[in-house]
Image (cartoon, rainbow over all chains, first blue to last red; front, side):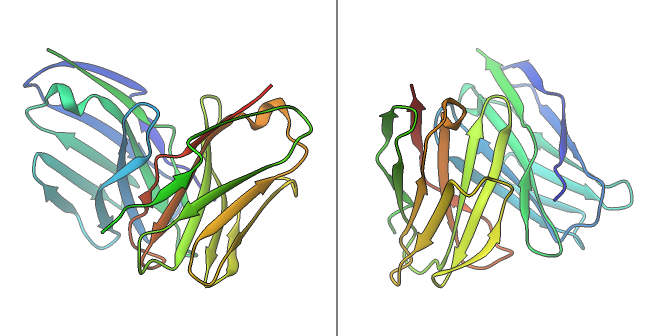
Length: 110
Length: 112
């Protein structure tokens, strides 16, 4: 099954700034999901975007999906120290296999 | 609603031993998936169970096995442990095949 490729691998920003991370993939998908993981803990689901959707919002999070370019981005606006975590995109294939990218590590500096 | 519960939280085992990890899904969730997370390989899918049947399987050797009970609780077993099996093992449950996963906090397995 395919894995998403995330970019950048790591990101360091000042509190209050926006953070953007990207996920690219190769074959068609059923949906694309974003998760957050705090150090040593389980993953927490953030947003799910279906293949026929282009943009979704949840609080300070905005996810876009461009199926023609096979890419998605996650934007965190007005970042806070509590946003420090690893962020993963996960691709659900049309045969219902979910695979995770390597993740982007975000550090928000106070 | 209680979240996904994994036990134990930490485990230290010796090479050659076997280990069983347990996962209780969110009430009403019939699908349970297991993932292995390591710094080198990231999150790797192990298997998924639904209604006591293995529905999907990742590319792991036969030493890794699992099962699901009628109450949807799941266990995974690793036999003949190797040093490379040291990892965070994550269990997740979901309502349906295309809905988000709800993860437990994992079992940290160290093999010495």
